[in-house]
Length: 305
Ligand code: C5P
Image (cartoon, rainbow, N blue to C red; front, side, top):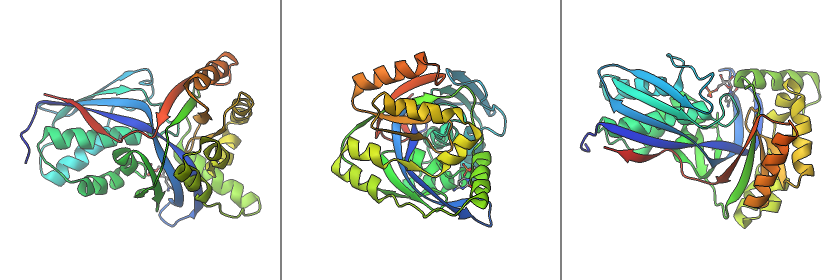
C-alpha cells in the first residue's frame, strides 16, 4: 500500500484508429475487431479529491453534452474500482474536457481510465497494471487502451491489446464536427449496409503495421483504413467532402476516427498541420480542428498532493 494523498490529477489522451476492421455482429451485441490504436496529444484532465460523497463537475471546451450522472464513464469507473477494492466510492471529481464528446476519439473511455488511475492513487490501493486493465475492459472496449497509450493492436472487442513496434512521431489534425455520433448507431448502420450490399473481403492491418515499423508517414497515410467510415459517412454525408478536402490540402491520408464523426488527417509536419487545420475551419468543413502528435503515453498522474 502506498501512502494515501488528498488530491490526484491524471492526464489522459484521445485515440485514433489507424486501422479498424469490423467482423460480423456477435451474439452479445458486440463486433469482433482488429484495430491499431494510436494515442494522440489531445487531452482530458481529471482531478480526484477526498470527499464525503461522490460528485462530478465537468468543465472545458467540450464539456457540453457530457453526462454528469450515473451514465458518466468516470463515475462508473469510481464505482467499479471502489467495489473491487471494498472501499466507499467517495471522491469529488473535476473533469476538464479537451477531447471531443461522442467524436470517435474515446473521450468517455479516457475519462474512465483517468478515474481508475486517479482513485487507485488517491485511495492508496497500489493496483497492478493487469488488475486495472481487467477493470477497464469491464467499463468499455476502448478503456484498456486509454490506460495503455502509445500504439497498440486491439483484438476481441478492442480490449485485448498487444503493443506494436512503431517508429517516428506523427502530426495529426483532428477535424471535429458540431454534433457527435452514437457509437452503437454507427455499428448498426454498418450491419445494415452489409445486409444491403455484397460482403467485402476483410482487410488486414499489415500495411499499417509495416508503415509503423518503417516509421514512414507517407506509407502510413496511404494505409489508413476504417470499416466504420462507410457507416459514419452514410449517417453524415458531409464528412465525405471533408475527407476529400483534407487530402486535396496535402494530407498524407485521412479517415474517420473510430465511429466518428471526428476525421483524423495525417500532416507532413507541424506547419502543414496548422495550415491544414486553419483551411478546413475557414472553409466551414468542420467546427474546429486540433493538432495532436502521436504516439503519446496513456493515462498518467501529473500532480498529486
Ligand atoms: O464497449 P463500449 O461500451 O464502448 O461499446 C459501445 C457500443 O459500441 C456497444 O454497445 C456496441 O453497440 C458497439 N460496439 C460493438 N463492437 C465493439 C465495440 C463496440 O458493436 N467491438
